[in-house]
Length: 94
Image (cartoon, one colour):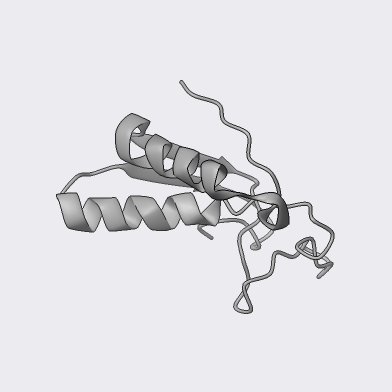
């Protein structure tokens, strides 16, 4: 089990994105998102009440890990699983 912490998207740097990519391509066979907000159609993250969390700097761009997993699964013919758990409809993967 690996637990990694990332800053908000506004504070992400190249090292953070490299670390994210290393986790997905070298250390991940399952990704679980539990009650984790995902981006809306406009790319911003919102609470169930429609409050923009992106502009407040509250959300790390973890959806990029899901995108990397989908790319890895397609390119490398791997089968990294992604499980999303949520209840409000604004969660990652919902």
